[in-house]
Length: 405
Image (cartoon, rainbow, N blue to C red; front, top):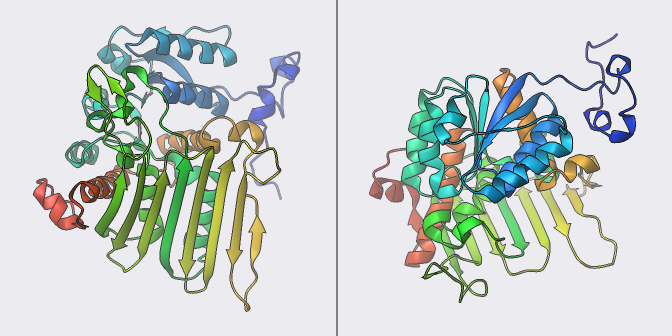
């Protein structure tokens, strides 16, 4: 029996080798007509990635952009022309104009971390659908303020914690939380070893005041995942870390960089799950690993980009279940164009589900509440490194004037 859903290929439909086929003759290769128009606020490397992925996903298009940096505007226009050579982006002169254009359905905010709350306050007055990049804020106070805005917000307000859509994490979520392959989860660990922070306009990501600190800026993704697998609130956080190698003598406008480049974090959850995070940002290449241990087995997965000439799979997952149940070894992945579109394909599926949210379909995108708790755990880890003491989360929130438990 037909299921009412006919297969289309949005990837092949955009390949230039099929441009000779008239629109009226396209069926399998029919391009989806965009239903929505978005503006991108902040068009650096992440904002430009959002432009490319929006156009690849196909159900929306980019109407216009706003960014005070001319180089970012130029990069965004070039990216847009790659997919829409006959069209022009609207370039707005002000944030207010970009947020309140009645021709636009949604806003994607990809500005520097420390601007998120101020930009969101302007954007929220529009009542439009909003995708706010991670971390949602640089402090728990700002994150809490955003949570208050979200409580009465009349449209979608989605937080850009898209790592939950990376292929290996997506499969780990399916196995651990939905299939419950390893039984009751007791321990979770995540590792990230990678190259240092890249350059940004005004080098804002080299300073904790503007980035929120490395564990907030870069690692909120991982704390979101730890929180998700734990299925509970964090109670205690202990961390150790330092600025061991990167940017030790780096200065910008007379200020010296103060961001961490390595850390070990342990999190105790209310349901007795224990989790850890291992960060090194002076390693060659990119390596991520997750291990989830339950009372019926273990899931271990990794993703790796290496400069070595030897062949190794870029992704790997093993589901080990001992002697009495079947185990599996798989290689999670997406089609190559999606993998290469940004963050291992995670940004593409973030956009798929952003539009699904707009259309009222169920998704597992990060809520504002989940975004808040990813910042809480990260900020508590930063505080633990600063003081050398464990941080009790309830006390930490109370000390900062927040009653969120």
